[in-house]
Image 1 (cartoon, rainbow, N blue to C red):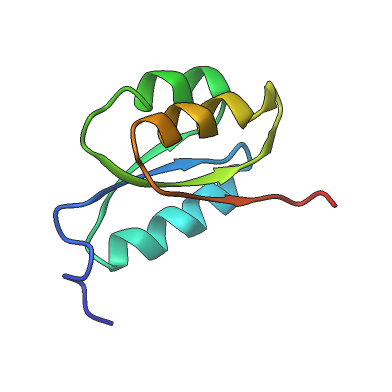
Image 2 (cartoon, rainbow, N blue to C red):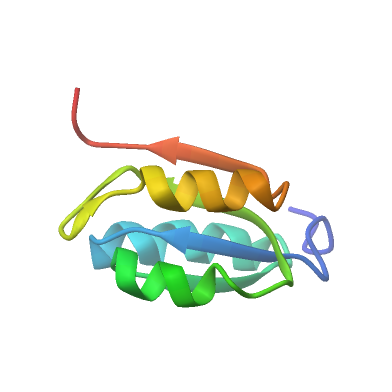
Length: 88
């Protein structure tokens, strides 16, 4: 794998399951990205203000609510994101 593909990029991972967050973070780090991980919406709000965020991977259903607000915030900042969920 080319470890420079995402060099200089910061990926925000919003995931409340630690093992899933770790697995996603590891994949992006192996591709050369810096990773910021939030395990709750409260933490995501703080990290989402970081202007260096290049993209985000978001678990839509978090323990402290759904990520709709976070998606809207990122969309307004033109930050691309992907949603995933363990729910139907």
